[in-house]
Image (cartoon, rainbow, N blue to C red; front, top):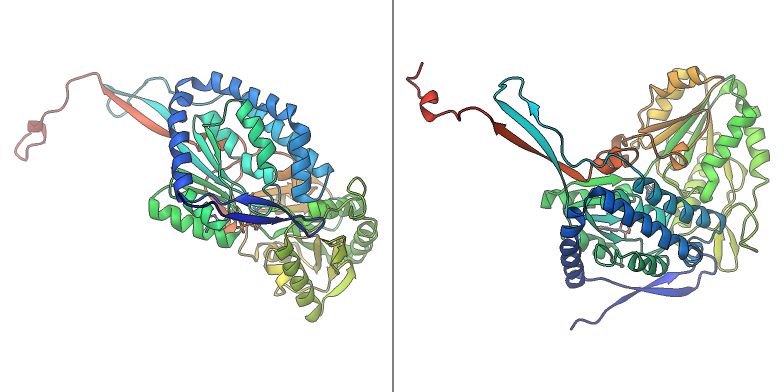
Length: 476
Ligand code: NAD
């Protein structure tokens, strides 16, 4: 028998190794896949109403174990309020999908247009086993955002959470088992090789993470001819037009850029401001940024949690140093604050930036706000679109019509009008990533569920089947 190996997990607030996870290998993953597939047969049979009722029970069990799950997410991410919001959001998501009326099963018979003797109906067949691979920034939410609609659709699910933030798994597993999902949902822990082994056993993979890993996942999935739905990184721009209410625009820019210490895919990462208001905008944003407090001394106080992943701190430092070396001006923030073994970075405002700096081209994934002035709206649109990413964007204008006009020109999957990063607060609007930010149908809205079923056609001939003689070369 193979001995289990373990991965060490660092505590984001203390810097100490205080947790470990077993690394699931190929044999364990194959056995878990077999259990999931066996449980899925009944799960598909019981139909959407019963599945919804069992998902409601899962929400109840999560609520019963809320304290333990929230404490684990808090330890994973080093923040309390957002961890609580994350757990409640997931419970709300489970309840929301359980109440969803519209799980497709079969369509009615439709008479053919080209040949009225032939009619057809559709059957929707769930994939047997969905794989979910998730990142470290919102560990519980991003492990379940695809898993829950997949379950409602009739699939079984195997989840590989990030090895950086896996503490939530134990208390969540208790809720899963209590709700009767022990066989239908498998959580396998480990690093990249466990993720790769998972892709070898599932029928479809949902991946949330970086572009670099997403590319590997897509190639492996292509080799097996299974779909890969990818939700990847971004470099979201925000455009602020002359005439915008600067108090509101700076509120949105600050929250959009630094909430969760900027460790969110939909964070604002570049801000383009009309030159006529640039100075006033920067002054106001800097004044608000300076009010932001760390939660280092007391997790129950402050606005910003730590940089969750140590390696991310190196990227932040590098992007800021590169910008300053190339002539950017650091208005506030910019220095990593070491406290009790953890790493914090305050809102970092950079001006005099140029489009070729790393901070304007690569995903920073931290509370960094590079602000650039523009002279014409066309220039702002061109700058915003000058990126390999296309996740989301924001436009702040004097009114919504003006904001919409600009939004229609932006190459990104979701545009917030007169606010920023609205995709984190509102999940009903369908959206697909542009460019390198992702692949596949929308995870938001109703498509979030229908992408987990395949449409099968039943085509019935009510007349006589055609005969071979009707196709003979010498027939009339
Ligand atoms: P990452 O790509 O490093 O890792 C993501 C997951 O992939 C982890 O669970 C990791 O173990 C696994 N993995 C690594 N190598 C693998 C391989 N070869 N095969 C299969 N799985 C493998 O990403 P991260 O650093 O954890 O997360 C940050 C990234 O996630 C950022 O780029 C961020 O923008 C992105 N993200 C995107 C969204 C979105 O909805 N678009 C949401 C959150 C985060």
